[in-house]
Amino acid sequence: MKKNMTMTVRGMTLGCAAILGCSAAVASPAGAAIDEPATYVVHFADVDLSRIDGAATVYTRIRGAANQVCRPLESRDLGLLVKHRACVDKAIADAVASVNRPLLSQYHQLHTKGDKVGLVQLANAN
Image (cartoon, rainbow, N blue to C red; front, top):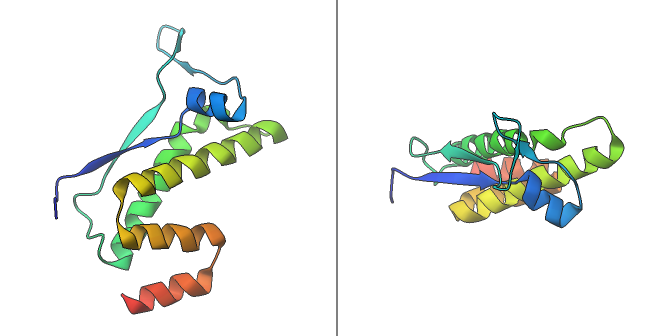
């Protein structure tokens, strides 16, 4: 197993704009909009993804990164709130898929469904 891996969460404002029809853009320091999607690198070389606690740790990191990447869509406006949630969900799903580890994928599926019993059973099995 490669221990020095990094993964990029991509849940972008402009990628989101194409999918969700939102008009958010990432601003550069000079104030101009950038056409590149926002990214956030999640490191997990220090985590054992064959254990449930490792999968949970990486999932928490991915969720935090997705929230950072999708922050420009964060709003109290109901329309943007829905787009923000969709952006976060897609960023998490894409990141989990790119890591491509069975336990993390299973954890994500159970977490997405809100299956707390399944998460406990998964934890007890590992």
